[in-house]
Every structure is written in C-alpha cells, then in structure tokens.
Length: 134
Image (cartoon, rainbow, N blue to C red):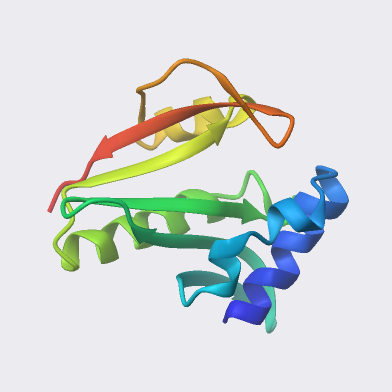
C-alpha cells in the first residue's frame, strides 16, 4: 500500500501542485507509517497517511484524491474510514494541516480551524481539528 500511496502523492503533490519531491517525501516517508489507500481497478485514487500526535490525538497528512476522482465523495468516504479506524484505536481527536482551498471540504466533514494561517511548502494552510465520535 505504501508504494501505491507514494505513486499517488507524486502525481498530486509533485506534478500537480509543484511541491519539491524532497519536501513531499519527508523523513516520515522513511519511517513505518500507516496508510489508507483507495484503489479503482488496482490503481490508487485516494490516500491518507496517519500517525500518533498525542495519546488522545491522531494526525493525518498527505491526504489526496486523484484529480479525475474528485467531487465524487471518495475523499469524504476515505476520511470517514480513517476516523472510524482512529476511534477503534482509541483516539478522541483528529488533527490535520489543511490547504486553505480545502477548508470547506474539511468543515463539511466536521473539522474546525484551530490556528492562524501559515505557509507550508509555499501553500497557505491552517491547522484543523475534529472531536471523533463513536
């Protein structure tokens, strides 16, 4: 699954958003992190990477959906799958860094802005958090 996630991340973040590969594939990419990947005909169309933030909070990042698969509910479905897994693992909160243009998507999925705007890899972002429900 990690290879499928890396392939999709390269397509979305490096080729589409022009993020430098050395920034996209960070130190966490070398570690053993958790990935969820949605496949369509054995090809990745959506992915999330996640890791422990604190004892009660799980952090997700590198969340992306293939351009041709957007606006079809795939991202929301993957996010819900991630949140269900997080609750099963005992987490109470989900935390993420959202690109400014993605704020409405996350708000629609129950996340709230919890920081001021900041630059991450040349893209304006905010930190967002959600209380997970059982």
